[in-house]
Figure (tube, helix red, strand yellow):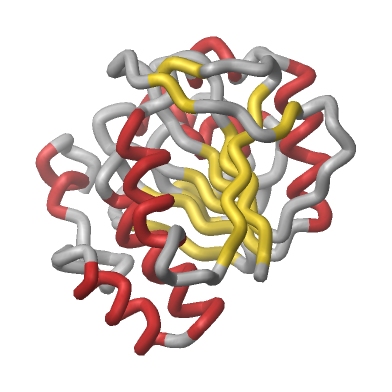
Length: 202
């Protein structure tokens, strides 16, 4: 079983966390989910729902996979040097590093996406892409994969990306079963992105 370190910070987007964890969580038995934050918590999402914390960023924990959500809190956290240092440290040894929505801004500011294909929330595309000019930002993508880095578009796209990650870990059949169990219509084409046109990016 692999460990999934899910970053929490005040003002994270609720579905950015809950959606992917619904896919990765039991009965899949693929990963042990750990909630990670700078403080002991509970940590409140933008919507006011609070999550408990398992590990602190100051702990010397390594994770097989990392999940970085977006949310209004990213506007503050892009200047959080300690958090960016944590992302660099845990990403160095992780097998997969995933972000949802504006979470890619944190990975970008940490320098982890330099020279890599990445995407983000299309409504916030201008702000996120201004955080790093060496990233190969994809204006039209439901999610983007470049090596071990997977970055998704806005909010609900995190579930599609997570199913793609499950397919990498355990095979396409496992991802299909997970989507069916959740009664979720998986957009399994990473280039499917009607929101890019809606926001004038293509």
